[in-house]
Image (cartoon, rainbow over all chains, first blue to last red; front, side, top):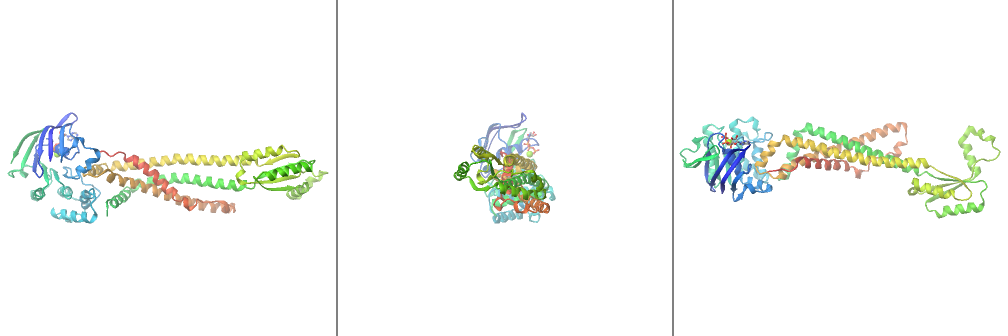
Length: 220
Length: 294
Ligand SMILES: Nc1ncnc2c1ncn2[C@@H]1O[C@H](COP(=O)(O)OP(=O)(O)OP(=O)(O)O)[C@@H](O)[C@H]1O
Ligand SMILES: [Mg+2]
C-alpha cells in the first residue's frame, strides 16, 4: 500500500529524513513517534505528495509520488485524509463549510454533503459548533474540526499528525476510539505522535524516529 | 447544488469580502472604459455631422461671359455622362445678381458703381455622397477647368480636406487610445487578482492539500475577475449615457438644433462595454493566477 525505499529528504542540505525503508500494509493501524524534529511530519508529507523524496522512492497505492504528474496529484490526495498538525482550517468559513470543503472537492452534491457533514459532526459531538468560525473555537475544538474534515470523505488512508495534541485525555480517548472504528472499516491509519500513552500496550506497530532515521520498530 | 454553483457562490462571497479593493478596481476600469467609449461616441457624432454637412457640398462651374453655345453644349454633355453628378442647376448672370442683391440687403448700393452685371453665369453641381472625397472632387474640378469657356471651378476644397483628416484623425486616436487603455485595464485586473490570490495563498495551499483540482481553485478567481469587468462595463455605459443626456440637454439651450443630430450608440452596441470589460479582466485574471503547481 505505502512503501518507502531508501528515502531521504533534505531541507537546506540538512536531512529531515535519511534512508527510510518502510512498508505499511493496507488496513494497518500504525504509529510514528519520536522527539520534536525527528521527521514525523516530513514522513507524512511524503505520503500525500506535499513533499517529494530527494533520494529513494515513495510509492502510494502503486504510484511513485516522485514521478507523479502534476495533474495526478489531486487525485492521489483525494484518497488520503489528513489531520494537519497545524489544522489548516479556512479562517473565513464556518466549521460546517470547512468540513464540507473536503466533499465539495470530490464533486459530491449538496444534499449528500449536508448529511455526511452532520453525521461526522454528531460522531465527534460538535454539532452545536457547526456554524461557528474557526477563530471562535478553542484549540481542541479546532482540532476536532480538522479531524472531522479528514474523515468525512471516508478516505482509503487516514494520516493524523499529532491529532490529540490539543485535546483533554477524555476527548483524546473518544477520538482514538473513532479512529479505531474507521480503521476497522478498512481505512489504513497512520498516526504521528509523541504522546506514547496513545499506543502503549495496544499491540499496534510503532515506528520510532530519531534525527530522521528509524531508530527501532516495536509492537507495543 | 453542483460544484459550479458552489464555486460561483464562493466567487460572489470572495468578491464581497474584498469589497474595498474590488470596488476600487471596478471604478478604475469603469473610468478607463468611459474614456474609450466617450471618445468613440464623440468620433461617431463628428463623423455623422461631417457626412451631413458635406452632403450640401458641390461644385460651382463659373462660365466665361463670351462662352459659345457649342462650348456650353459640350459641358452639359459632360455632366450627363458623369454618373456622380446628381443634379445640375444653371444660374444665369441675372439670377446671380439677384441673389447677391438679396444677400447684401441694405448694402445693395455697393453694386451701383457697376455699369454692367459683373457676375458670371454658373452651373451648380450636386454630387453623390460616396464620391465626396477630397481627391475625387479635386480631380473632377481639374477636368472641368480644361473645358473651353470655363472661367473657374470652385468647391469646398479646404473644408472637405480638413473635415476628412479630422474624421480620420479622430478614428485613429480612438482606436489607438482605446487599445492602450484596454491593455491597461487588463493590467489593473491582473494586479488586483494577483493581490487577492496572494492574500488567500494559505487557503489555496490547504485546498491543494485536500486534493482540489486546478479549476476548482482557479474558477472563483476567474469569476471574480469577470464580475469586476462586467460591473465596470455596466457602470461605464450608464455613466456615458448620463453624461450624454446631460450634455445634449445643456447644449440644446445654446444650440437647439443639436437634438436633431446628436446620436448615442445603438442599443445593439450596449453589450460591447460590459463584454469588453469582462474579456479584458478575464485575460488579466488568467495571467494573474498563472500556473498552479502541486
Ligand atoms: N519546510 C521546511 N523547511 C526547512 N526545514 C524544515 C521544513 N520542514 C521541516 N524542516 C526540518 O526538518 C526536520 C523534521 O521536521 P518535522 O516537522 O518532520 O519534525 P516532527 O517530527 O514532525 O516534529 P514535531 O514533533 O515538532 O512536529 C526539522 O529539523 C525541521 O526543522
Ligand atoms: Mg510534526
